[in-house]
Length: 110
Image 1 (cartoon, rainbow, N blue to C red):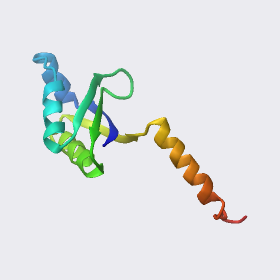
Image 2 (cartoon, rainbow, N blue to C red):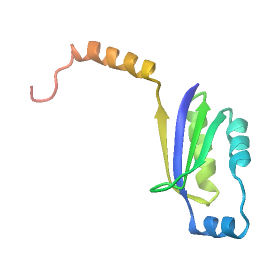
Image 3 (cartoon, one colour):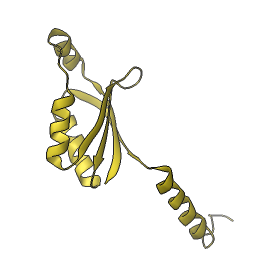
């Protein structure tokens, strides 16, 4: 399983609706993530460029993308972004592999 971070904003209509009738979206988000085959790790409301942040564990990119599409298709979210999060151990393995591969690679114009 891999960790995915989804970020985005609520549409103006979604915010108007949640002000008129506040609701905690965490249970609904967890249900969609689990039904798709993942696990919700965290859901936060945030300040700044994004209004919300979802951290989830998914078996593959297909599951993560499916969840992101469902979130976007509902019409309440805008400006969604998805990132894959790696542990430092995973990143170190990639750096080591890149170091080996770089030995046989010549950059353009060099």
